Amino acid sequence: MSETPLVSIRDVANHAGVSVGTVSNVLNRPDIVANATRARVLAAIAELGFVPNDAARQLRRGRGRTLGLVVLDVANPFFTDVAKGVEDTTGAAGMAVIFCNSDGDLTKENAYLDLLEEQRVQGVLITPIDDASERLHRLRDRGVRVVLLDRRSAEADLCSVSVNDRLGGELAMRHLVESGHRRIAFVGGPHRLEQVRDRYDGAIQALADAGLGEQHLRRYDTPALTVAAGRDAAARVLGQPRGSRATAVFCANDLLALGVLQVLTRQQVRVPDDIALVGYDDIDFAAAAAVPLSSVRQPRQRLGQTAATLLLDEANTPETHEHQQVVFEPELVVRESSQRILTED
Image (cartoon, rainbow, N blue to C red; front, side, top):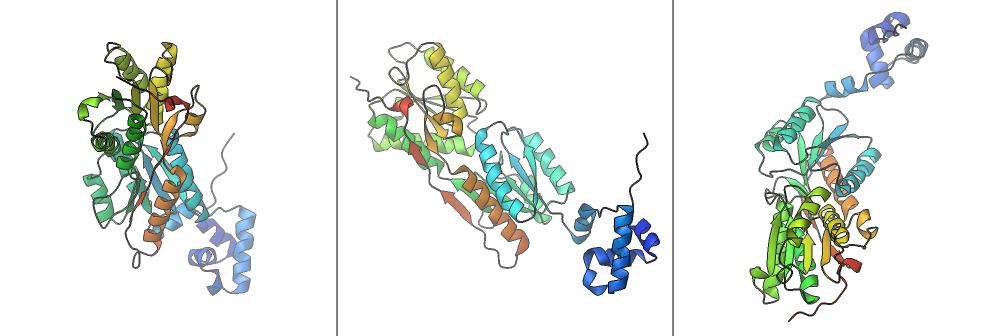
């Protein structure tokens, strides 16, 4: 079966007996075309089944009606919720979103940024692996708007939307310390990610505020923020002698915490009686876990909505746009995984 050839704007012009320019005016500036001529062109469009190439028209004007969204891990429900917030805002503005997953790989991130620039997107929302990325600076120099998402910008002329992760780390650790824990494990990584570093630093600060030293917190680095990495870390925690093993685990995100919980349950370690557990993000799965998970809640959809709003404002009104670094406050949601009060000698 042969394909029907696409109808071109020249075909419409020939059928209506007008110039290509007149057809273009009917599509883009119909008010300047005489009523009779406009009616003839519209009739030709309907008869031939012509579909205007909106992408081509947008590119001729400069940039298309698309934005790029680059996240660290599309499998993480946190970023799914962030993307929902982005889509709600951009969809209402008649924009489309190209969703890209860097997978924590700088090579993939740069490849996607190249692709988005080729697509002439109006802007890019990104959770960067490296916030000092030369590739991001190059994008901005070429007129592509950039907003950092879930990462605070160190530059006053670059918008960002983030959460105070240092405070989030403090909230989680303070809760565990006030519950009596003195041997605590921090599970998270890679440590090059600013979010992981901030959550760990916040935990250290909470220990200091309680008059406790860093020796009370043992760090278990992970190669990724995934369930599988959480399972591996849990095996290392349980591999310690029982008398010196952590009585509580604070994970840098909920996926890690769910992986830890799987191993603890499989090994018949009681949560929270033997080991308390706190995650981060408060994804929907946290409350639905076998043992409902305590977690530091982030306003996931609001992050996406706010970042998209800033990007659209910069793209539409660059003359009056004011760059902002929006920082949301996290909150601790305490559930069964950490509620037991522990008294240690």
